[in-house]
Length: 281
Image 1 (cartoon, one colour):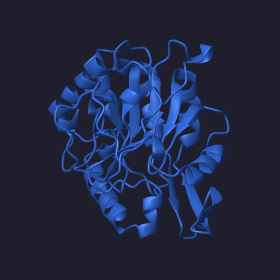
Image 2 (image 1 turned 120 degrees about the vertical axis):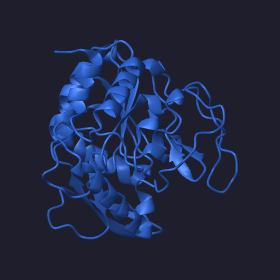
Image 3 (image 1 turned 30 degrees about the vertical axis):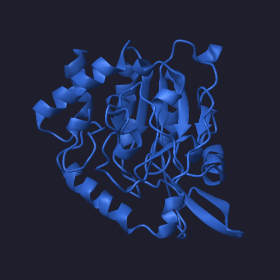
Image 4 (image 1 turned 180 degrees about the vertical axis):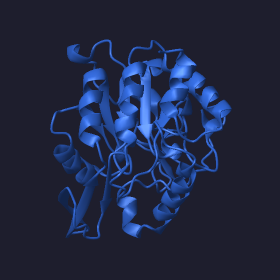
């Protein structure tokens, strides 16, 4: 799926969005680069040209190292607990937080949905959080269809209280934070092989290709979101996931979708490409 990125932008992930998305994606990348140094507290993804480790694949575990170069402690066998009876038979969807579901800033935002106090180096900072449009509908429907896991490269002391406020329905069966990522070539990577789920039934929804560089074939990329209140990406993705939940193998579906999109030469019409690839009516 990595060969489907064009001009360092992820695959289209919304219905009815046209080629203007390309310029919006470029603007989004510029905004990311202009964020303050404190933004590393959140997503920590800057490099969109990360290479996968040689010989890596769905079953390869790269070395676990800390930012200072030291080896991490060996992780538990799996990051997730056993599947609950409620989620038995469902696929697992790993969902990112920052710039996928919300946008957070240390600068005051007049229309912030949440204000979360976070302690950094002994000082309390107010974090202003904006919810992406239609995030409530998206999460509620995803919780009905999948076993949902929040997986963010942000620190738990920020992301956990945000998730408490965002997920009022208990959609997320588990929450994974920075310490569950693999630090690889300057990026925090979400290694899906450590979840303890069958990879052919795992999907990751994320705005940063660097986060799923080990498993691009499992990814449903989304555009980075900052403050566009007319955005409908999450709403438009619901029919796509309703269909995907019925499929046995996510690899074959996402591969066909990727091939279909290449032939269309369009940045939008994601769902139409999906239906063409799966021959749905």
